[in-house]
View (cartoon, rainbow, N blue to C red):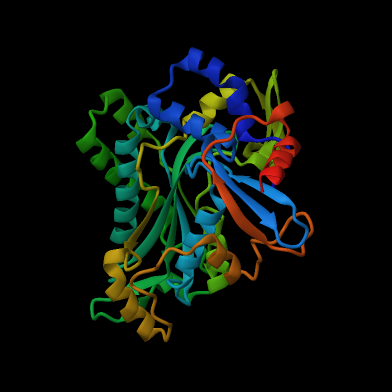
Amino acid sequence: MRTEHELAQVVSLFKSDYTAAHSPTYRTLKVLHHIESCRTAALGGHVDVCDECGTVHISYNSCRDRHCPKCQGMDREAWVEARKEDILPVKYFHVVFTLPEALHQIALLHRKEAYDALFRASWETISSFSGNLGIAPAMIAILHTWGSALTYHPHLHCIVPGGGMGASGRWKRHPHAASRRTVYLFPVMAMCKVFRAKYMAHLSRALEIPQAVRKALFAKDWVVYCKPPVCGTDKVVEYLGRYVNRIAISNRRIKSVDAGGVSFEYKNYRNAGAVEVMHLSGVEFLRRYCMHILPPGYVRIRHYGYLATAGKDRLHSIQRQLNRPLSPRRRPKKTVAQLCADKGLDYNLCPHCSAGHLHFVKAISYWPRAPGGTYAALRELLSAAI
């Protein structure tokens, strides 16, 4: 659904000022260029004609950048559809591992090392507590680096099934998953201490941590947050969909963009999570947004244990024991048409008459600005050519 204001507008208005004030890296400038060019003539596109009303439709290509708010929908749907085949009929626990504020500056300067340590320490914490119960666990981990107000807040959302492989190779349910009253997977305070020790061990191998920072980090308890368990295939998949392929801010949260700055919605957790509107200068808005640009090629969704690719045999064994269909070893990538068909949607329906279907006519690698800068003029030119 098209929104009145978009992140691309913010980039177009304030990119020059932001560049002059903060001298961003080439990687950051590349991402901003992708967002600004997304679904414009700069990336080319194609022309379709409705077989019922004859209306000419121009569609421009997407940038496919994972930081662009307009390019995440199909990736999210494809990922969620694939996960449906791996969901087991058990409780799923949601655990959130968060880096303390004292580490934020180090993490911003050494993002790959800091995020890698976060993934490793989180998985080792879950594995350690599960191993004490004789369970080989699994986990899906999703990295987020933002707070609702675009502040820097690196944390890992971990979805953990309530059971795993026992020493005998048989499915073993987590003791807490058997209770209807259970809220937490493991004791939270104990997890905090183990997570802190494992994270600092991994980060210290990669970076030199100042002694003053190390002392401050061990002086405070770290935050590991546990949410109530989720049960049922549909609920788990829906739950996963909330966190997958999200970016720091969506277009629908942007309420106004003008020369004076940007206003956007955020949740004020100091006020019981009330939805409020914040106004920032354009340069400050982009500075906050660009803090959440990941290193090139960085994998922000990872699977562990029997949910990893290498654990497919163990997953199949568990599915047989729980009388579930086996998930495929390889999943062919679905097209947009296939994803829409699975949901009963007709993606090729003409938006003008809602009766005919669009048919491809020609590709446009680049099209100059239309006379008067209007789509209507461009449609007239294309209609004459067709």
